[in-house]
Image (cartoon, rainbow, N blue to C red):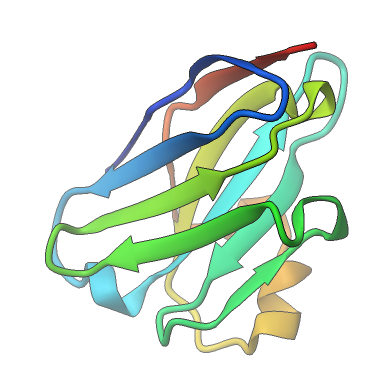
Length: 126
């Protein structure tokens, strides 16, 4: 199971860090992704950290968002800096047990993920 937390209200330009705590074993073998969704739109890929540590991000968050993981704490993080109002969304974490390269993981359909967190709302005010 995955438990996402850390969402809230933040002013534009500010930072926020989301956490995704995983229960169970073998966390280190899973690649951990973050998605976001706004009303009426499909869930969109934000970024992913591969089980081996490599990362990949959507273009609109590159240089602002950073995904990391702590395999001892079984937790993945999404550090968001220089937030913009258009980053407002419900953010979800997801886990997938896959040996795909980052290029393949970026395009992985959402229904291929093994586990999802419940979502945490991030609101960026202008």
